[in-house]
Length: 425
Image: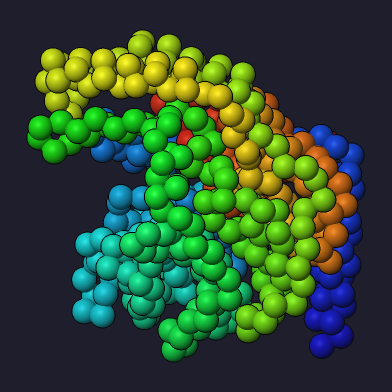
């Protein structure tokens, strides 16, 4: 018994020292993500991530994957639009692909990505198109169904029997973003925050920089040329995190930070302590002109599965005319949300990432909020070997390391990797 107690004390002291080290690294400014070359060594990534080459109507879909970390340090990767998951050992070695089997032992025909772990032994997924979120054990055996009658942008576990959900619904004249606490045991739900956004005003604002062409066969091509358009303004959904047995709801559009108990009582209100940015008229025009130039030189193969060459030419001409017209309509700055996303590190700090001012710079400014709610410093995350995708579904902290689904810059074949980063200066 004494030996167990001593081991526990040593473990807690080590965790405490490591936590302080993370904050010390943040406070020094530039944070470098250094890949662990032994993690996942020996995996054939062309086979492990063969779904990288998935497309829908010639649009690449292979990067639409996410990861969760299991209690023992194993990793499970979800392949969107596929009906299986990949499991990796704590050392990153690929182990197997597995399916979810129903009550009769047959595989589910359609499943969504795993959102997290609850009860220390059960996965939960996002809802499918019927509103059902599946729960199943680590061997893929069905456990239960949670009914969620709305779309989901984020789900996180709060405790042994509670989940927090960021959802949204479309009403007749408005969109509604909301945050709810879902009881895992009985599926009861409590909405703790909501915001209605005028649908007509939002639709009007989003016509600029959005382009769609529908072909006679029912297929279509769609694109947006402004990288921040779908995230800018009051339509940004809340971001949530659980720290010290409290649910933190952060509103990108207003900069508000709300703290709730795990039963949904509002405890505190505060606001970010930095000025929100914007995309200037000059920056917008540069982005739009670059998009026009790139669109002119894009190459779609003849057997594209979309439409005939003549139909594609008509579509391109119409979209280019609209893009050029929109270039002349840029007259006002676009306000940026206060942050793009938040990620909880392994010491309970929340990292608020800003929108990068320049695409593909691979440099990300981040504000660090301690678990007591106080912002303590600003840092910059950089990486030389990988093109970073800063997203809680692609980047997860554990024991001071970052586990990620990231793109290797100099790769032959499939560039996607499951990688573990050391956080260093």
